Amino acid sequence: QVQLVESGGGLVQAGDSLRLSCAASGRIFSTMAWFRQAPGKESELVAAVGWHGVNTDYADSVKGRFTISRDNAKNTVLLQMNNLKPEDTAVYYCAVSRGGGRRSEEYSYWGSGTQVTVSS
Image (cartoon, rainbow, N blue to C red; front, side, top):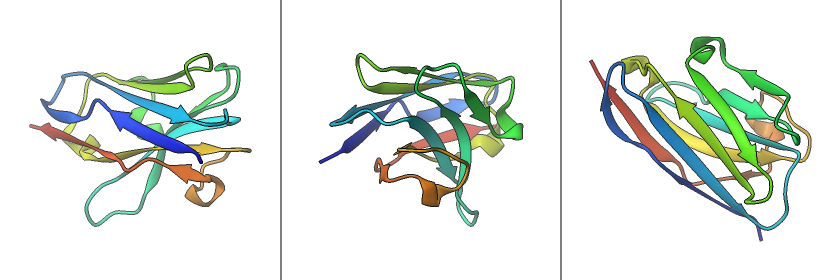
């Protein structure tokens, strides 16, 4: 049974930073990622990282502000979010995939989500 547990969300002001963490139990997956979903909007890939932590993919809206990393020894994935903007407000979900990609359908297991709220 694979379980993903996120932590690190909260309420911050625009320009602040937050770091999200996701701990995975069970097997290690090829790709670990963060998605987000804002009210009334579709889920979108925020960032993804491959097995070795070298190959990464980011949504255009977060490039230069967010950094994804992983620690396979601890089976965790981190999302460092800097210079947060009100439009970053969403529920953030950790997800893992045996392959990878930008579509949520490509990810097998999901965490329950953590709320990030950025006030202006």
